[in-house]
Image (tube, rainbow, N blue to C red; front, side, top):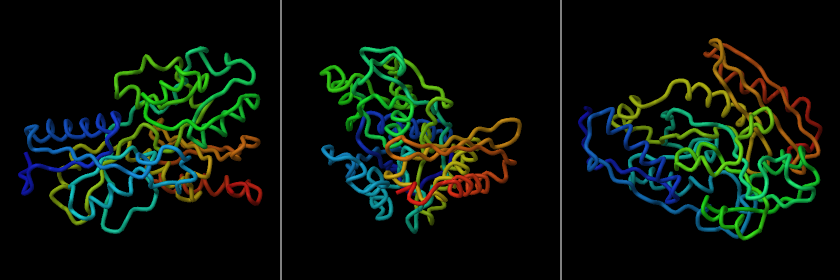
Length: 309
């Protein structure tokens, strides 16, 4: 057990059921690994801009950082000791003074197709309404099924399921990782293979952020860091950073470790789904970040002017 000068260790998180599940998973991994008691931790709920404003799209609100900014401000100020994030929400640039180098074992990366009327996407009737707040999913959906209508669909899992029950849309998409963490995998009619719908960069991964100068907490977190997830995210986030990805850019990417190498697939799309540019590459594990940057550069070289908005 690592002795802590600060007890309890304050864990900052959003207040949604999924965010709390992720914070509790982080607490449990730390508790078991270091032989600590439950009262050695305190979970601190922080409301973010993305949580407060539900009547506008993420793009209108300003893109990446909507679900992390206030939590990182609390971390920087010392109001909390660590912050737990869904990595797909995280900007690629770190605020000065903060470090993000602890990642829990990655969950299922696939998107879930959720519908009260169809078993899979191909079964939706022509012209059906699908709800999603994700620009990536919207673009991929319009590419696969240009006949479908797409409407804005924000809110937590419970809110989205209520909208489906009320007939606002015939289907929506959620992350399998979130459903699994909440014990609600039965909600998914089908998990969509990455070959059909490549997931968001870092989907299914949890990151734990700390102050860069907090060596005590750094040692605590190092013991629960998952090395394969770290390598996969290094490739994916380098890919995203080179593309300068934001919530205004439909970007998908997935890295896997296969035969001792990093295998990275990536794609960029026009927001209306009219065009997709995709590629993939492999590299030694030590070159994960370089692979991400190289794959992004290849996609950019093929993209016509204005493709990324």
